[in-house]
Length: 310
Image (cartoon, rainbow, N blue to C red; front, side, top):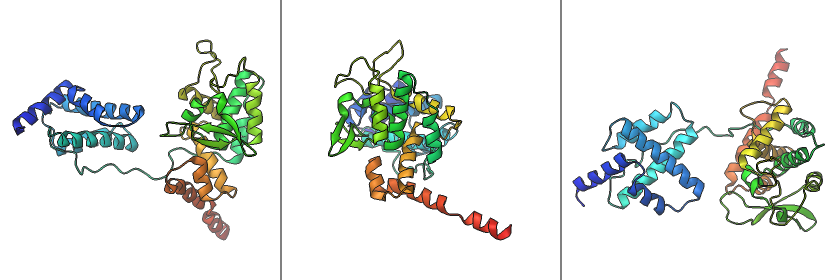
């Protein structure tokens, strides 16, 4: 294939947006549907940038300029995801002999280490739970969901995927089998504390039917009554419980409950490997972030200095 034909092909990609070359690329990559959607969104943004700037033959400098352009409106984590997708796209183009890999060795953006969301203290967690009205079926459901999130560190998608049949026993413990992140089957489980199991059972008593294949938590809305909840609904339930407890902050979301489970476990004597298993981290370095945060929180140097002065 001549260089002229290669450039003609590339101009077709730029001019046509998500055309046949991109379709072939998306067929080539073997990733989950959510990751594929991210890649499509990223490449679409890149193609839009090229079209708006009249660029028909992008170069390495184009990719760098696009990265800087993204800084104005996107978070570092989003920019990194977009760059990863575009880098993969141009790697594939070069492998197919369609275009030079202009994104090769383009540096990403610096992402701050640590959690993007805060965790709750034990007292704040108690306050969140105590402020949920459990006199209604919806309240009983919401209390059970929040209690499960706080004590197990489950992700919202894991709550959504849970069915009635997934609530089982292993040994002398009640457990909930889950389909974790990046998993195709419900091969892992979390232990359900007696207090949380009681809340779950109280909620399940309000249900008209309890077939094994039914969702563990169902909607109470008129439009989707009895249907499976969405991650958006779970997030809203979590956020509402936080706001009702006077904890209204952008840094406090449903994911904060996951951080709370990991943090409180470490603070109350759990070993690092135990917390890794609790949160199902593939790499223990991910769990180490919790440990570093706790070490700093336990450092009372400021109080020592203040006592020396005052």
